[in-house]
Length: 452
Image 1 (cartoon, helix red, strand yellow):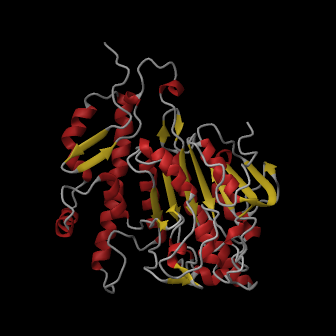
Image 2: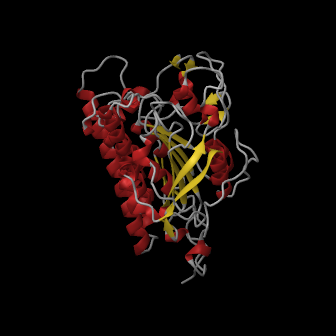
Image 3: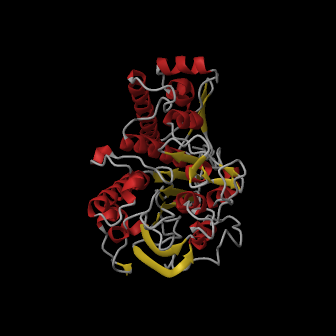
C-alpha cells in the first residue's frame, strides 16, 4: 500500500446544490508518517466568550477558599465535573463600566466594556463609540485559517433601536462584540439563520424559495449524498464512526429547528414577533445554539465565538424554574431575601446551562484530545452586585485547557481593581497571535494562569 502525506486536507468539505458541509478532524487528515498524534496536527486554540447579564449574588458564587481544592459553591456546583479544566477568577474589575461622571447607565456600560475595557460614549443616537473587543482582535488574526472570522450568538432578541439605558444606545446592551469603536456586531438569535450560515441555504436566497425549502424539510445531508458516498468509501473504520456521529448531530439539530418552526407556525402572534426557528423554551433554545457552537468549532469553521445568555439589562422571566418575575427586577432586590433567592436561582440556571456546553466540548474529540482541551472559554459578567451595579471583583470563570497552556482546578484571587483586560490580553497571547501591548485600561498580563 502506498501512503501519502495526507489523505484529506484539514479544510475538507462535502458539497452539493448550494450546500457546503465542513468536516470534523479525521484520522485521514493526519500525515501518514507522523510519529505521534501531537506531531500529526498541532491543535488549534479556540476562544469563546459567554456573557450573563445583571450581575450575580456573589456569596452564592465565590468559593471561600483560594487555590486548589476549593469547594464549589451552590451556584457553580454543576461545573464540578470539569474541575481540572476550570479556574474561578476573583478580584478583576472593569473600571470603565463605572459612571466616571456620566451618571446612570451601568447596564449599557457593562455590555460595552466587558471585552473592550473602554468607557462608552453616552449617547442614544447614532454617534456611538466604544472600543475594539478582544474577540474581534482574535478574529482578525485567526480568521485567515477559517471560513468565518468569528460568530456572535445570543438567546434574546435585541431591542431594535434607540435608548435602552438612561441615555445610552441599545447598541451597548445588545452585544459584547465590537469590530471597531463605532461598529457593534449583532448577536444571531435564530438557530435557522445560524444553521444556514454554517451549512448553506440552497441555491437561492429568495424568501419564497427558502420557505418552500423549509416546508419540504429536506436535510442538508440530502444535498451532499453523492459526495458523502465517495468520501466514506476512502475512510477507515475509525473515521467512519467519527463521521457517522457528526452527521447524526447535524440531523438532530435540523430536526429540532424544524420542530421549533412547526410550533411557531401554529402560534397566533403579533406582527412583530421573533423569527421562525426560535424555540420558546429558554433551555431548548440555549442547547440548540450551543450544539451549533460546538459544530462550528468541531469543523474549524471558526475559532472565535461570543455568546450572550441574554442582553445586558434583560428583564426576561424564567418560568421553567418557577421565576415569573423579570431577571433585572429581581436583581434590584434591596436586600429582600425572596428576590435574592430568585436571582440566585437564575444565576444557577445560567451556570447549569453553561455546563451543558462544557460537557459537549469535553465529549467531542479533536486530534489528540477534546475540544475542551484545546479551547479557552471565558464565562461571566461585567457587573458583580446587580443591586448596587458594582464593576469590581467580577464573577468570572475560565474553562478549557488551551492546548496545554492552562492549568485548571483553582480559585485564583488577584489584587482588587486588577483590570479584567489584563486577562483578555493573556488569553490572546495563548492563541499564538500577535496581541496588542494594551487593550482598553490594561496594565499588563495576568500571572498564575499556566502554573504547570
